[in-house]
Image (cartoon, rainbow, N blue to C red; front, top):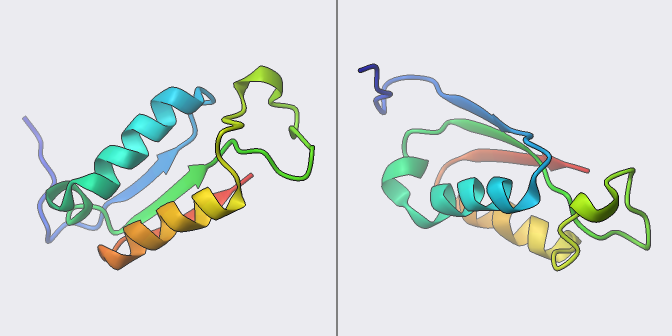
Length: 88
């Protein structure tokens, strides 16, 4: 089985278009420092409510989240040393 080690450069892109699955992955990384320690750079399409726009996501958007939630998650990840980025 192949595994990542802290010496590896690991980039993760989370763009499944299923907010519940995406947030489960993102929260697992943010909540478990041993996982975050393996990730160097992370890119995440965060489906959240923004000024009444749905960006074509319709019911797939995670409307319980907003820009503050997204920035908070990125802050948590960056505090753990992950270069974390999101887009909408």
